[in-house]
Length: 321
Image: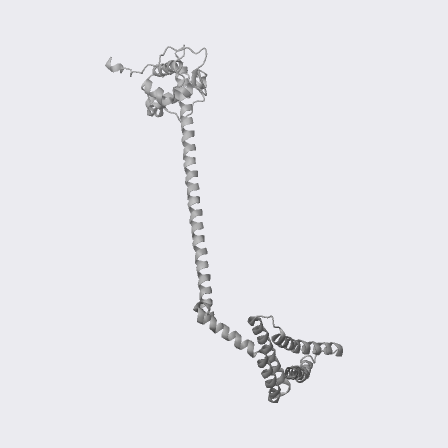
């Protein structure tokens, strides 16, 4: 019987609170929306205002009491929401009734606190007991740990960014250096090809200078930049043309014996520089006297030679004869 009476009183308090606060909310909303001319729209607005404020309060109040499966944290949310709506009703009471209306609102506050008192006390005890078991469960410690975790994540991300930037910078420098070296190799290759072609033109020019009539003829295609002084700067052109012919004959003789000769071995055998051997072989390749394949360098058919690949000896100076 006691439980039935208590339940009837609880529901009576709730209905009474709505009966007290509802008309005040209705009247205040009418004053708030008095600029609306249409009575129908004004009625809808007043009804919506009362339903919103009183409905949110009553909904959370009922959930606070009858939602037995809710966790303490959820029940605390119900209680706090109901208290916030109670503050809204206080503002409405002050606007409509003045200080006298606070008397009715205090009774409503007592009912709300009484409905959620067990939840508030249990939640508080649970929080304090959790902190007593471990300080790590304290809200301050958790907030501090969260802030430190954020700082650590930012520092870690900053370090990754710096490492990535350094790697990109190093790769860029390496790529630029590789391109620079590749350009230098290209220039050297072009210079070597130009030098070889100039030497070939000089040989042809010397051959035309000593024709049967004794008249000197020069190739019109000889580059004007190749002057006699420049020719004297080439160390392996200071000798007569006969030395060049002898060198080619010895190269043919050596290749006839062993096609696998390369430039360093050929230069070592003949006792001349690699540059002389490379230039002479390039000229003979161009003239078709020799050809190259996977097995080495071979003497072309029909190419006669008197050399036998012997080491060349420097010719005596005409002044010392």
